[in-house]
Length: 193
Length: 164
Image (cartoon, chains in turn purple, brown):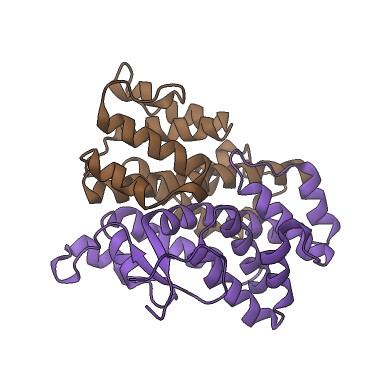
């Protein structure tokens, strides 16, 4: 088996669990019910089967995830993905960073933003709106969170409305959750493996 | 739980139904309701598995303190049964005493809360070596991850109220 990937990439890896997944044919009714609504990700079968050990949180988290990432209105899909990438970089979740940087690139049709962030982090050459979103999500993802009034002002100065800022808060926070599962409970492995 | 203004995150951020941000929150009412439902699922699941409700509340309180989130810490502290064993776990200075299971749980909770990027394969092995069954490792992971989400939503909402 290949070694885990340690550098950020936009190529979505395979996820190898560190905890034995629930066996589908032995899953309880509650586990099956919790797994029914799955995120529109591909290749996370093993991930969902690991989380099925705790069906009560899985059942709530899946619609919560979709509600934050894919609802209409508020922050655009592209900028939501940028917030997800920023959090995943702080928490060094290679898998989540790959999925969401790839989505960002597809939606924005511009690969220079992610390239810049992967290469230079906060020094990347971003436009003011991208910079404000990236900074805020990065700072909110620290422990303790470091976002402050100046970061909030940067967002409003860049033209974000409160509905957009709320979506950014939810997205960065959501990846404070998702990264702590994906990065902790498994390893990103090259797909060719 | 239809009233998002009585939910833990919205109350902790000090936002009431007549606040200027009420409409913005209402626009994500379903997400707020699912956030509250997740709180119940992570803190008070029935049956609780190998992590008691008291331990869950104490760990959540500990994590809120590690995040300097005093309002949430008080909320969780109030959920710990008085005079119970888990109360110790809420204090970040307590690292488990002589009990291997408690030591392993606290070490993992602190690592994933404060420095998740450093978590590795060996950290999951350490939990297994301490005799913690795999379903409980996932339950603990979900609790840690949920609180990681919740403290940031509260912090973000509070920054929004200051700017609104």
